[in-house]
Length: 384
Image 1: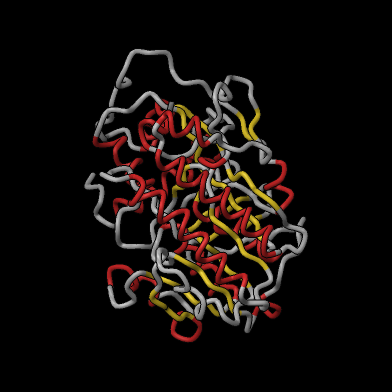
Image 2: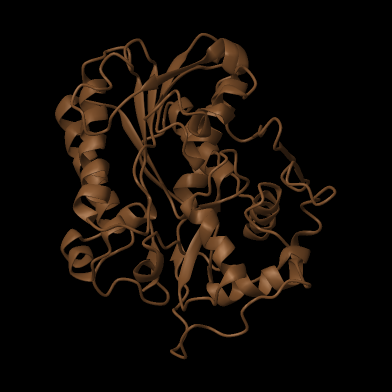
């Protein structure tokens, strides 16, 4: 099972087409992950503006969000950094929490974002400290709770993964329950909280938002990251119901795309390992970070948004990832064989119906993969 290897989520919709199959839809300029143009859907996407225009879904205009105050927890992380960037570009004022606001490695990239000087305010917060978020969320219209550990190397999963995820989520929601100004909370969950049940992941199964991972099965399998996200979301729904909190969850699969932060995040490191190591026999779901962030903002802005949203562009076996990388970069050395000779893990499907009804359009995996690699090269994590 894939999480045994990397402790992250499945996603479940197969696409075997390569980058050239999207040549009619996307154009990448000068091998720079700064500009993509999606012609058929009439969506313009640029890394500098990170904006999208949707004809099918009306969302808040810039004028309607000016002056609105939101909070983003764990703001120095991969997803949260992009979320802060897009919120600032839309005109929001952002309260962003980090463990150490004085650590330039964690905050310099945030302080340098357009609009940050005027509308970004950094605060120190501790996920495990009750009341740590009380004053921070005061006056906010919405809260985006993204802070949760995603690590693959640990000695004590209870202390390093499960407790921060569960207790941190409860602390944030408890603080939100005290502030009547908060209209909605958007929780960054995961497909890890959706797709893990005993004998459930069989070929032909279609996973959707009605699925919930089984904590007992996950414990037996010792998928500790999966357990942390499963218990965190389960606890969040209980607290939201008890306190009448309007909460929406975003449940992405493995998230890739260009890095804003200077540090190497776990999902980008997984792509890097395809270049540096052999590939494992696992099948993973993938989605672009900009689609994940856009889904968060839509989940806050669209009044009818509710419940959970599985966020998956595609699912492929690791062998397909290597195949795409080989076509994109024919001169680099890539693994030729899988780490074992067992049958490949099967491909599943995940419903996109609810997420697309929210207004989300997906960047193809092949484009996201190339932009991830180019970002790794730009930041000197890859040296080819």
